[in-house]
Amino acid sequence: MGLPVLKGAAAGATVVTLPGKPSAVLPLPAGPAKSFAARLAPLAKGALANLLPPLITVALILLFWQLAASGPQSSLPTPSKIWEEAKDLIVEPFYWAGSQDIGLGWRILVSLQRVAIGFSLAAVVGVLLGALVGQSVWATRGLDPVFQVLRTVPPLAWLPLSLAAFRDSQPSAIFVIFITAIWPVIINTAVGIRNIPQDYRNVAQVLRLNQIEFFFKIMVPSAAPYIFTGLRIGVGLSWLAIVAAEMLTGGVGIGFFIWDAWNSSRLSDIIVALVYIGVVGFLLDRLVALVGHVVTRGTATN
Image 1 (cartoon, rainbow, N blue to C red):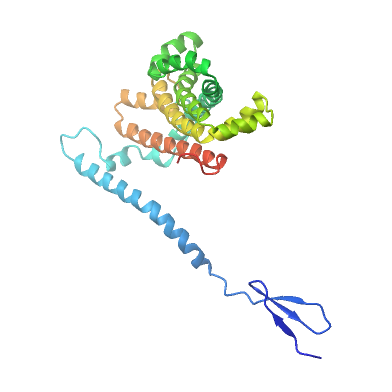
Image 2: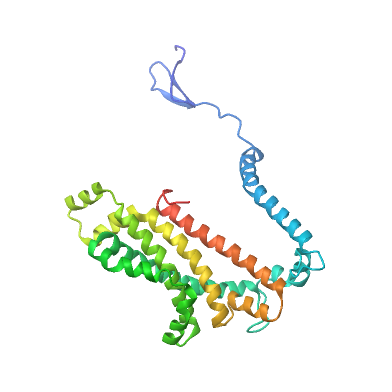
């Protein structure tokens, strides 16, 4: 029997040919596998590069705050005093001891529920109206001036009218969120619709798409980066509006907690609540940005 003949093959394999036998592909021995530590090192390095700068910045701010507020004339509590006076609010955000004696975590969830309802309504109505304004010249001429006037009205200016109309604080707060968040959604959606390439419109005409098919298959995908930019602005405004509205409407939301803490001169509680509000607002923005990144395949504005 003759010797086997080795021939070139794809990377990681060798073709062995024996006289009178069909060719066989034998895999080459795999190289040494990377250890878990070697695979984890780049991830740890990236996480450290992203987390270390903000941690250093926060530490410097707290140090400056501690030094600046330590004087006898200072009216603001130091970080160490805040920890002493409001430790329970920080370490136990979900405690429950009564209808009003609850942790900040529960208050945040109540406020988030209102924001979710109002912002969802604003997103749906805003996209539809924005598509109408962006697609129709007559709708632009008739509605755009009205929108430009109404969007300049401060959110809390709508609260008395909403209370008079709904006669209940819950729907009134939701309406304030809705009327605050809808304007950036409308404006950005309209801009996105106007910037749809003419080639896409020509394809829709060739395929004879009706208005509904054109809306879902052409308009929304093309304008998605603009839409999600408006949604990110809208969710931030919603969170601002609910905190302000709850200060006046009462209830168990985070806004009323701040107002009640002010009336009781609990400045430490107010500062802790502000930190909660800022963190939740940041997470809401990141959540909408993540959804936009997935939906638009990375073309949305980050």
